[in-house]
Image (cartoon, rainbow, N blue to C red; front, side):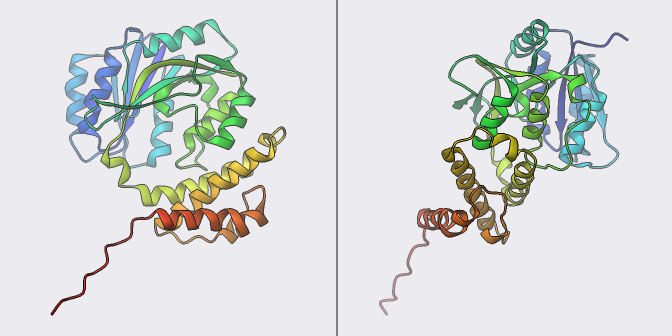
Amino acid sequence: MTAPAVSICIPTYNYAHFLGDAIGSARLQSYRDVEIVVTDNCSTDGTPELVARLMRQDPRIVYHRNEHNIGMVGNFNRCLELARGRYVKFLCADDMLGPACVARMVEVLDRHEDIALVTCGRVWVDDGGARPLRYAGYARRSVRVPGDQVMARCFFYGNLIGEPTAVMFRRAAAGRLFSDRYTQLMDLEMWFHLLRQGSLEFLREALCSIRQHAGQATQENVEWGAVLEDKRELFKEFHAKAAVRASLLKKASWDLRMAVTVRRTSAAGLAISPREIDEVFFSRVFRRLTYPLVSALWTAQRPRPPREQENPD
């Protein structure tokens, strides 16, 4: 069987209520030489039945169900292991691709061997997937940027490249798979790995939709603990290179963002002391000024419970 040019990879777990929209958007791509790889991490909802029905309508859909739940990183890697395409286009199970998404990104990778990662503008939409909430993108215009510059910018200011749904890359370049040292920032670390091999191409067009829904908030408390640990790992691995040409302001911005992450983690019920945090540029200032200031502002902005009225009797 001839391998397709593109593997649209959809890792999923208990998202049957959104999965049909995701697969539907993959099937409607104007670029037809694709396979649609669904890796099911042992869902307990109607995912197998839904995918089986869609497979009868479209032979490009490939379904794999893991023998047991292997975690989010493991399931993303299972997608990569099963993918046969020259290019990989991830699609999160609650998101959607615009009809021209794959075609526009393939065009870039086909023409430019030095491009390691293509990303696009994306629109955040509501739970129903129809109402736009906001636009997000790497820059205000379409641009090509050397990989090391993108890495440095995203190290200090967060994942401006985008979610897995927003990118495409060469399968061969991602052969080492997603790192299991990361949980929530596993995508950003992979983007860094790819950008060591070439440049970023950003397409300003909103070529995909990222769904915002209540289910994403259910794991917030657990996730903030994971985000903190991932940011500590990211600092250890990348700060020396990112700081080479970094200004004091950029370094201070990292420390400020780390203080916010520590405070949010504490608010989620996971006790952490700022004295335990060594992954900052100005540790003394962080402990004496940056974190106390962030903590005070956080407390001041938290809604206070209403005062109880005295019983007139």
